[in-house]
Image (cartoon, rainbow, N blue to C red; front, top):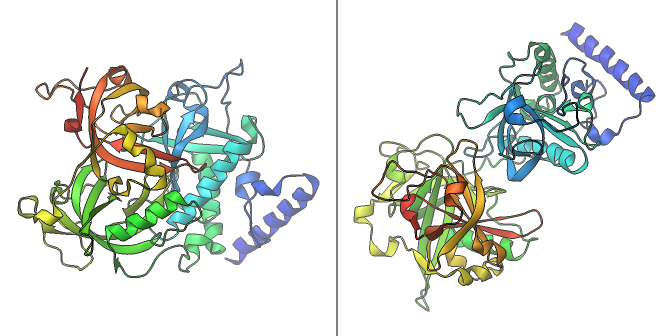
Length: 484
């Protein structure tokens, strides 16, 4: 142990001395008050990109053929500390779902773990700075040659090394630094399976050992100040809805439920793409007016028992209320979805099965025209949020895009040019003919130019510029009727 500390000190002294000779912008360096800290990211000669992301003519290479390309981030593409969705700047524009190779940061989506949000924020800040002022390059697991990229176990995400420079636009490939290693160096991840890069392995493990020695972040032995260690509080969906509407109307308003552990009840409005949609109704004791409130619950990538997915089932669950860049305000990190009867007061439970549900809890589907959505940004149709809606207007598909796995499709519609514009998200292979189970649409080209009748869950997200973007989420093929 004494020899290791001495080695760190000597190497640290060399780096400090070198920095006096070479001018370098410190905004591109991790901050630390520890003079013994080694900046492996920027000083290691072993962890470097070995081939260019441009060809001999200066054209950006195609990720899907060469395993390397320059990218920007997809809108709402910051998923968590080790997953980001990118849009290539060269070759095909098909989105790249990157799962960072060699690391495994704490969870910040389906389940939220201590230091998960810190890891996500660190990754977000570094990439955002590189997108704005510098360069971002994605490579797959082949670093010594151009080759088709490798997917992870899901088959839909690509194992990726993320190379950035936060200061130089279109930086030479020799001046890019590995974000995967930077995340380890700052104590936001353990090293995980770097066997594909034996020349990198020693540096990765040295950076991890240093983060442990310096007690950085998840190695600090201290509680994460951003993580809620408290108990669950009983909360109504109406209370949550009203806070969400306030944040929509006023960008400076801080949602009182953000990062709060809550216990909620609601009627299942649908389940698709790992998201459970709930709705509750509330009757004013004085006026008798009925209001509705909805929420989306991200259930994580693991499957949940089918009894919680059946529409018109009334359930209770405990989870973390959290603002999401991708899905608006949502419930995540649900405590447990037991297959059998719940044994813990925090377990999710079915209160009323669909066949037994009282009338006051039955699912309500709204009917509305496109023009009625125009007031959404001001919070007028608050009842619609995360609730099922049937549009009385036909929708014409003008374009869109399909995910890399060929399953999820986002449709642009003729409403996109109006003030109440929205997109339609189809997270399954659509069956246009109910009587023909073999014919399913697999690409945006099959939707384009068609007119549809639509039912779906109305969701939203708020862009960094403050714009409200609406999206209808189809739950199954019955939600989309082909008109022409």
